[in-house]
Amino acid sequence: RRPKNFPPGPPVLPILGNILHLNLKNPLEDFEKLRKSYGNVYSLFLGPRPSVVINGVKAMKEAMIQAPQSILSGVLRSTYAEVGTFPLTDCDVLCSCTMLFCAIVSNISFTGKTLTPQIMFHNVASNIMCQVVFGTRYEYDDEFITTIVQSAIEITKAANGPWTTLYSSFPWIRKLPLPFNKSFKRCSDLVLQSLNEHKKTRVPGEPRDFLDSEDSTFSEDKLIFTAIDLMIAGTDTTSNTLLTAFLYLINHPHIQERCQQEIDRVLEGKDQVCFDDRHQMPYVQAVIHEVQRIANTVPLSVFHCTTKDTELAGYSIPKGTRIIQNLTTVLKEEGQWKYPHEFNPGNFLNDQGEFVKPDAFMPFSAGPRVCLGEGLARMELFLIMVTLLRKFKFIWPEDTGEPDYTPVFGITMTPKPYPMKVQHRL
Ligand code: HEM
Image (cartoon, rainbow, N blue to C red; front, side, top):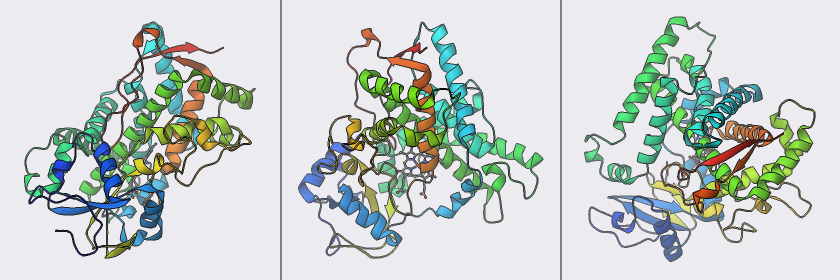
């Protein structure tokens, strides 16, 4: 039963709760139907526990920014504080861009200039995270990175999928072999191996990377778990955003060309782009933000939990309630965007052609628990996209049929595999 003055929601079945109301493979359409019936703050029982789903920019801001102390999730942010000790520079990200660039060049000379970008973008994003966590970049065919990339893909597709919903609803079945246990074990074995190598060469007080940051408050298990968490959080998000970017750019050639004209003009006479150049590139900035809006890369954010009894939108939400932020509803909210339902960089440009960022742009969530990697992700997206668009023209192969823009649901949204033709620009 719903507690007194709890947000409304559909009728609850014994034991199952509202699980039958959701298509567990992709519940986003069902969430939208429920929002239309019950409003921007409604409740659901995923098994016996109540959850509150938050929709739309107004309720999202009230929950995440104005009442944040009571809606923080359980994992302590301090676990990640050490990451800030190893900030990456433009140069680090550009080195990874160079590897990606070489991979594209060798790939197009082997395959008659058509390639499938899936793993390539995962490799570049994962390699940047490898540098933060392990202090090393790997060749793309190295077993270490291929295993990490494969496991990250499997884990983010399994988590949020039907099994996880069942496992989080019915804790007693967690002891059964989870479909993603194998991927997790493969990852943790690799991290442990690297941690043991680190221990042999570590100099106290001179940490080289995240794995060197073991201190008295970090147990070895916690360090390994956090390293995997970081690898996954930093790989599948950036790579799926890049995949979405190129899917749209090759199917909107006029937008791709306009980016290239701006890039050519701003970088004329320069060898390389740097992150500061973004201030001279309002159109490219608008395109990258529009890609993030349409990609909706982390549609349900990371689940939070109330840490004390909380008032939200006039409802009472007891301590310990799971909070689900439906970021999809903010990124496509009518009234917040000039073109909520189409891919249009005009969403981020004013009448003078200047870059503007509406309040409803929240792909990284908002408030004190906002994505820890936002700064790094924004730098990666800008440097990688500008470097590639400057050197290459990306084309939708004529014999491929119509593009399918519908992504595959998971913690992250992934575009379906697609091919692209690549030509050198002069
Ligand atoms: C386009 C890329 C990315 C997107 C869209 C994205 C999105 C998000 C979102 C929506 C959250 C949940 C925030 C919340 O709980 O309210 C999150 C959390 C997080 N992200 Fe990202 N992220 C991206 C890239 C990265 C990168 C590159 C890193 C690597 C450093 C990273 C590390 C994290 C971590 C560690 C958390 C958990 C933070 C916490 O709970 O305190 N993310 N991200």
